[in-house]
Image (cartoon, rainbow, N blue to C red; front, side):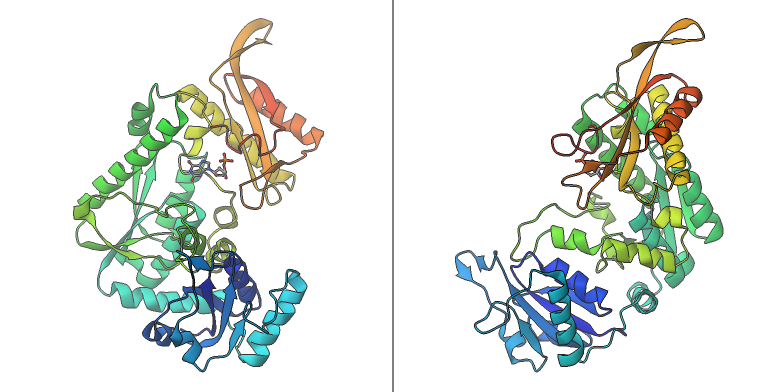
Length: 429
Ligand code: XMP
C-alpha cells in the first residue's frame, strides 16, 4: 500500500464517516476501526500516521462507557482525542474543523497527501491479483455505477479470469443493456454473459399489483437467473461485489445499530458459496465515480443518477403491462434527453417518469381516446431521506410534454409532480 493513513477509532460518534471524508478531502487516506482493535490488527494496518478518538452519543454500549483499547493508548502514533478532559472540542464549523484536522494530519503526524485514484487503482490491482491468484471471479454486472467500476477494475487486474453476468430483467432504462454490451463486451473485451430474461420476469410479474410483492419477485428471480448462469460456469471460486464504504458503515458497527443489511447478490444457495472480492469497500460514492472515470469508463455510466434495483418495475405502477412498460421507458428516455440538452442532467439528483394504471379521456385526430397519463418527477436531495422538487422552466416542461404526447404511443396526458418528500416519497411505489 502506498498511502499514509489516519485511523479513526469508533467511540460511538455519528460524525466518524464525515471525519473520514474530510481527511480524505485533505488528500490523506482514512479508515474507521472499532474501539477494541487489537495490537495485531493495529500493527497490520499499513502506514498509520495518526489516530483520532472521537466519542459521541453512542459511547455507552450496554450500560458501559467504551474506550479505545490498550493497543491504541500504548502505541507511539500521535493521537487526537476530542472528548477527553482538556482535549479540544469537536468543532461544528467546517472551516475550523478543516484547520484543526489539517494541523494534526500534516504538522503533528507528518502524513503525506498521497491519497489519489492512481495510487488507489495501483494498490487494488496488486491486492486483487494477490487474492485471486489463478482463480476465477464472477460478477453480477447490472450496469450501475458500483458494479461497472468493479468490473473495470477487475478487468484491469485479472482480465479474462473475470466473468461478468449481465441479467437484463426487462426493467432497465432505454439503451442500458446495449451500453453494458458495448462498453464491457466490446471496448474492454470482458468475458461477458448477457442474459435476456425479460419474458421470464414479466411472466412472473403478470397480474401482481402490490409494490412490495413486485420488489420481492424481481429480487428473487434475479438471484435465480444469476444462480443458473453461475452453475453453467466451471471453476469459479470468487464472487466480486460492488460493496462501498457507506454499505459497510450502514450495516452497523459495534456502537451503531444497522441502518440496513448490506447485500448485493445475497441469497445464493449454500453450494454456491464464493470468497468475496470487494475492491471498493473502502470508497465513498464520489470516490467510486472518480475511480470509474480514472479507469476510462464513460461519463454517462459513472455520473449517472441513482436507479432503483427493481428498475422501471416500480415506475410502471400497479400490475405491469408491456404497453405501459414501453411507454414509461420511452418517456423516460425523452425526459433524460431533454434534461441533458438543457443542462439539467448533471444538476438534478434524480428524474424519471412513472405511469399509473388508470386511463383518462382525451381527443386525438378528432376522435375520443382513452389513454395513459405520464407523470414527471425531478427531485433534489442529499441523502434521499428528504427531497425537494426541481423548479423546471416552463419552456422545458412544454417541450418535454409535447415530445411525450407526440412520440410515445398510448399517452394522452403529462403531469408534473410538485410534491416534496415528505409527505410524498421519491418513487411512486
Ligand atoms: P423513496 O421512494 O423511498 O426513494 O423516497 C428513495 C431512494 O431510494 C430509491 N429506491 C430504491 N432503490 N431498490 C433500490 O435499489 C428499491 O426497491 C428502491 N425503492 C426506492 C429511489 O429511487 C430513491 O433514490
